[in-house]
Image 1 (spheres, one colour):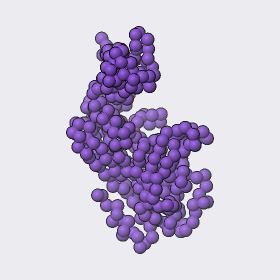
Image 2 (cartoon, one colour; image 1 turned 120 degrees about the vertical axis):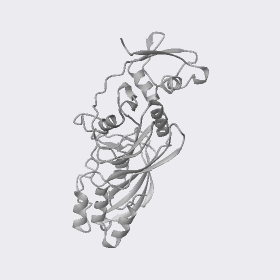
Image 3 (cartoon, one colour; image 1 turned 90 degrees about the vertical axis):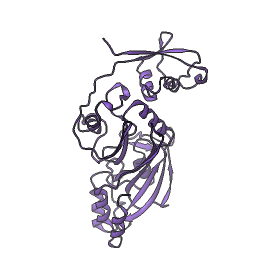
Image 4 (cartoon, helix red, strand yellow; image 1 turned 180 degrees about the vertical axis):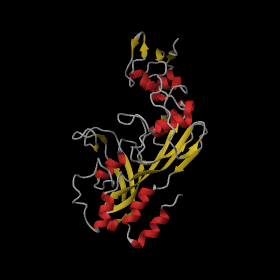
Length: 338
């Protein structure tokens, strides 16, 4: 006996001419998200008149019937692990956490266990969204291993679809705080530059003259530190590209402190001012980047919600270590939780 399903989806006039994945997702909602439909199409699970359709961008034909095969869910590869979570909010539809630095989001080569997925499986169990046909949390966006802060996961397909749409429409707002080398000039502004894979190093992303995807970051300098050799900045994302803040800040010459991938090959151009300040910054063991704020519309209730995660202790300690004495009290007070 199999749990495989087949759906016959007939495109109405009002969806004719739209992208096929979008049209079929509208017909299959809320049980199946657009992301799930895209995966099924590219996996060869869609056919028209007995012939496979594998391009998600194909235009839907009004009046045409499509056969969508839903494979039986694959068993979960990740196993539930009792890993403590800093939960900011949770209900039947979403869970919002404050991810610590060092926690990998998805299992991958070298990180088969001990991830956020393993933790969420233990905490939420069968309530989690089955995005991708595998029992796994419906994580809408990701944070790098060494980036801390606010993350949201969907606990069902309908919630995942709604949050993904907010992300695509740029209605899911995210604010980050970072410690960067130097003081940006101007002290606030907008960075616009398409981001894509670097041709020189495939592990890195880069701002490209041609190609790539649109990326927009607003930044504001909050506090100089270490005699001016570093500063605390707030960054607001308008898009969500891989390594976006790390790439954009490096692009304007203000690399994130502790970033092993985008830092310059030599620190000589950064060495100025007090040596003790410089060494404290140079030895910081991770990229000093923290997702401090998220605003979203609840996928079920429509309520506008806002979540905050205070600056983690290691970044606070770093700033206090390199702060001039006259600013120490001001810094300490400014990092208290809102």
